[in-house]
Length: 158
Image 1 (cartoon, rainbow, N blue to C red):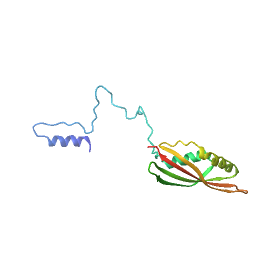
Image 2 (image 1 turned 180 degrees about the vertical axis):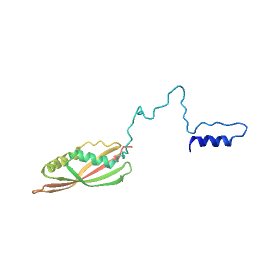
Image 3 (image 1 turned 90 degrees about the horizontal axis):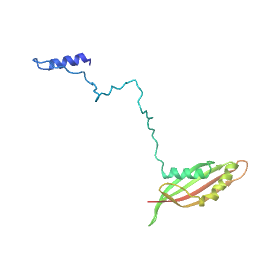
Image 4 (image 1 turned 135 degrees about the vertical axis):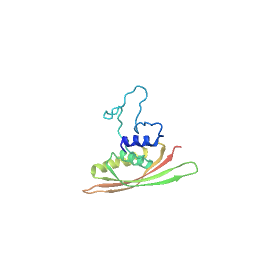
């Protein structure tokens, strides 16, 4: 509504003996002697909008650690996670199947098999109690390929 109509309605609604003058609605007041901000000026501390970043799970961290150990030359085929517990410990059992495709990748896969049982993993809140190779399917020929199944037993540190 235009400001004149608002002022006119306020005058009519007031008693006939006195006239009430109202200020236009949504008037801003500044505190102290601070000048009104310039609407065209840029903000002093522009912050970029926050992006949604999903929380990384233990499974994500296990996959990342194994692919790093495989020097990013493996392709993840499957990853199964099962809850595990005993009388004194609890944790998860991870079974991961990796595909090393090509002669160079197979050589790195052989290094992966040799280094996995002794590798020191750093997964927050978890302790890797056991890391073993359960199965290896190695195919020779013009398109050399090796599929490795690794099993990791993680214990909760809490």
